[in-house]
Image (cartoon, rainbow over all chains, first blue to last red; front, side, top):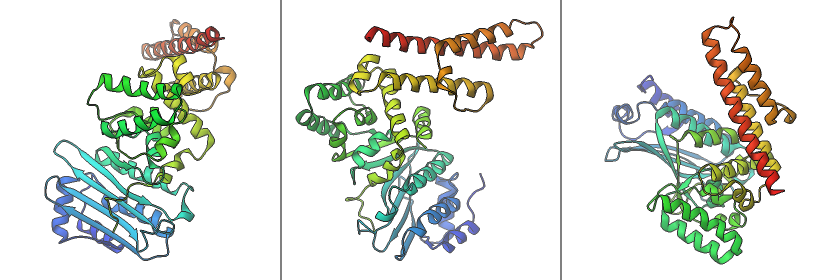
Length: 240
Length: 139
């Protein structure tokens, strides 16, 4: 992998991204903590896919923080990004822990007129391509915005917080028929009997159980996608 | 600037993965397969819990098996007709492969590859047979 260089940063700035501090410091940061991230190509692809989706003024920012754990933030948003109908927002954070590289999917909103046309899916797949290339092991998401509780479950994100799972389980107990609830409880029991403090509860198994769609749509939980799990990647490929 | 304490990834982004009906059905099959293979439900228990049509699941397994075979043979995958996704097809093919590996004019390297394919075919045949016998028991 060719290390990122000053020319790359100039091209990134030419796309309209602001780069913090001095270029030398940013180059050192990237070379030390994210040596396999092709940042110029990554932001170019994001820009080419998103810039045409709004006529509002765009803000494109890169930020980095040396303090442990070293962090790179990418934010791309329109001036009306808080508008649920017209706003565009995209934010990702790369976090370099001592033993692994993790990406937080902080935010992604598309203007209403461009939803459900495959544009979001295309950008997620673009991101995954770069994540795998630069050694990201996990993608984290806060599942809850606009049906996200169901959708990220279906996309094989695993839930990390048992207490959040138990809130959903209780909702299922109150809402579902006995037969439906027993199936939901069975998945919970099997998983936590194996791993009482497990942090990768298979939400996908809940997502297709009868009655759970409605419950998960309004749920809120923290999830992770394990990019080191070949089975998960195979499923993603099949759904692509 | 986005307020990260309030926002997260919008669900409609992920919904695009399931926009096509075929993809949604495939997803359900993937989930049922996971539930069975990881021991959350028995085969019949999973079909019941997920209200999964047995025939549809069998077709999924057969298609998956076919793809695996042709991928191992040709390095690629392609769709094949359902009528060849039957246990007997794989058994016949396995025997053909097995017989050919016994001929003298095939070099050792190819023989090993054919042996692996034969074993794979027999395994898939057995898997499909088990699924089908499960159907009969239920009936």
